[in-house]
Length: 503
Image (cartoon, rainbow, N blue to C red; front, side):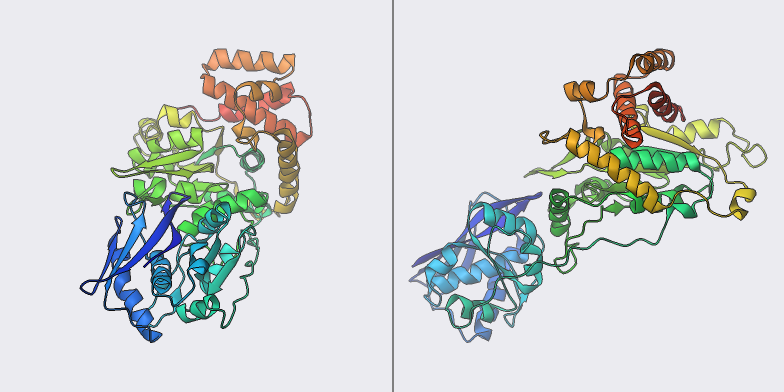
């Protein structure tokens, strides 16, 4: 007697379909799982056996074989418990076979039969919808999976509830979507006194998703500015929310199935490892750059990060995705993030102040910022000097724009870009523009082009730097509501490009 049901194995954000086959044959009593299972999957035998015993269901005294097909695909995680249990129940005629053969299931079993929440319910639901399958999952995952409206989601609190549903004794209602929320921040840009140039740079960065580095003495407000950046970012679109939530689902970071329209803000410590930043470790999990997809990656004390970690950022910044290569798999994660870096001008931090700088001036500054390689520095669209704030400014009242005012301008610029890139699948903001599209949308007027050519020749801008200036100028023009890039837009973009010289 052979029964079949389906589940998924995760490769990055991709959920690959796995057929769970159960054969009950005469022979010495045994319960084996084949198909390249890891330790957690192999231990499912004891969890399933105990959960069935809690329901007073005894396994037959026969040879039970579970095959996870395709057999050469590694199977990891405890979410295989529920599909294995359902395949066995169908094989021994406790539940009708057709109820499990057209379904995809995932969930971990407790010894008493309770279903425990697992990671990856959202990408599993999307795969179920793609294959026209019903999804069975734990109740804790139902609100998350229900965001995929194209597939019915049946969420049960225990294996007993699932069994009664499949046999028609007590039908479960489909799960409902969780709460769509947006994080409320009480930090406002108006609280930052002085630093108007830095606030302007962050406004431009938020409007076009440009990378920015801030260099200034300790206590000048770099971290304070970055902490208030989420308050001016536009909310996630429906597609962006799903993309971001899939990654967070695989990492177990979604709260009770609720999706958020707030953009991610990741701020790893400078002692973080390469696997933590880029991704990797057991199961090749997503790193900070993928968790920051469609949001912000803030790296404080930027030069203090290990050099190999910094250099690995170069390719993801350009391509918008990262490939975690392992001996048995290549896992791909999206990572279109806005990099915001903060750094001191030197090791002691007081290079611009002759009264407080160390005796190694200017070598200490060259050595310290020299930890940021030229190719990596070339990828920052906006470079900002953040000088110390005078005591007169600190004592004065805040008179700058509030976060709400800045966010309104940013949203208007983003709306322009949404219309501009409609029909371009891989372009959403000005930072994504390249090739013929960039030439079409960012060709400046003659006076502006003349200025840019002079700057490029005098300061030796690279081809990448030249195009990044055009992208920033396009964003500045969008903030001004201008259809054509004028000379002042080019001048402001160039000013931010040349604020900090590469090491």
